[in-house]
Image (cartoon, rainbow, N blue to C red):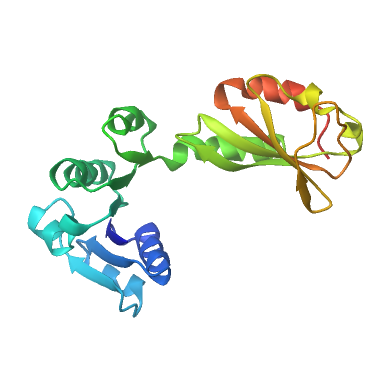
Length: 217
């Protein structure tokens, strides 16, 4: 894959090097020439000094042939502008923009741009860890509308039937018992130490909390 990363800060440089190690060809654009040192000596990463919204600079990055573009500068406006240029002008198939303002998620998502907003889901993850230390999110889909949550069953939860922790909306993905994954029937009981993976729509988190209250260990 040919990837263009606009922004060579902490995220951009780590993303570029990680993708390069996987064998992809990566170009990185940044207006700060000194940021190049964050890329080390990786010969597969091409650095372009310039402004990410400059069409000539983007052309130098090889965006015309790019399979994907990631805009991860420190500016929401720059990232969204780069993403729109990549998507609309250069027809890049996969475009991701990082933003810090949750209010900018919806308008750009409908334009075919994947918008990642760390504050939008980060606070929820932190709150969940603080209030429910025995569970964690292992996957979020979209902007967090659907979550896969891991629940560790404690002694109080032993014997609880699968059907008592599920609804048409909140469903069981799998149970891992002694390191072995399985799909138990709804009448099967859970045991202390079971690791339960649940699919939970964000809109039904309160229902999920009610269903599993007291089961965690």
